[in-house]
Amino acid sequence: MRVLVVNHVSLDGVLQGPGRPQEDTRNGFRHGGWAAAAGADPAIARAMGARMGDGFAWLFGRRSYEDMLRHWNEIGGPFRDGLNETTKYVATSDPDAELLWPHSTVLSGDVPAAVAALREQRGGTLVVLGSGELVRSLLPLGLVDELLLMIHPVVLGSGQRLFGPDPEPRGLQLVECTATTSGVLLATYRQPSS
Image (cartoon, rainbow, N blue to C red; front, side, top):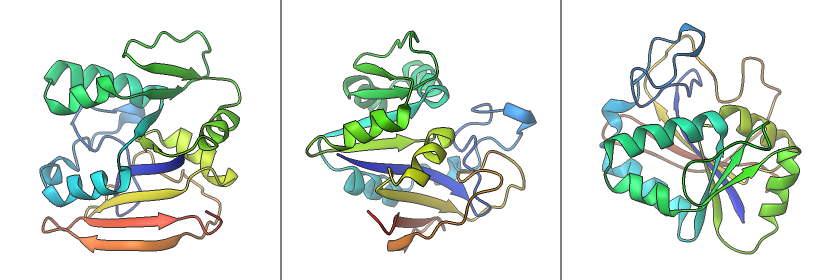
């Protein structure tokens, strides 16, 4: 399986709280919902579908998993059914974590080793949404094959950044980049070793 990171980011690299005002208010973050206006852009949905392909599973950090479970099961709709019916792997420091979504499996202990083992399976894609801490643990180990970043034309100035507050230098290879009518850049990158 390959690992695909799919995230909305601001021009200054923030991934925190893109969808809803109260989505993630850690550390006093007050800019939640900054990507919501572009959420109905059909080009974004097409790009995600094309990159994810058939036979994918979700790979979440615990915070993203719990937030998506709560939100999508409250509002309903077709995305909820897709999340409920698809296999989900959840990285957590608690090996006894109770996962309330169907088809969910705990990845605890050496999470990068567990992800590496999943990557050895044939076919399919592990799709990571949100989950900044998880992404930052996998990137340096070469465990991310591709990143689809939806780069929004906004600078937030604060918030959790995809690559962390003080990232290590990292070269990425641009595979594809298109602009949507809403001004979002859909940029696909690979790590050079992938």
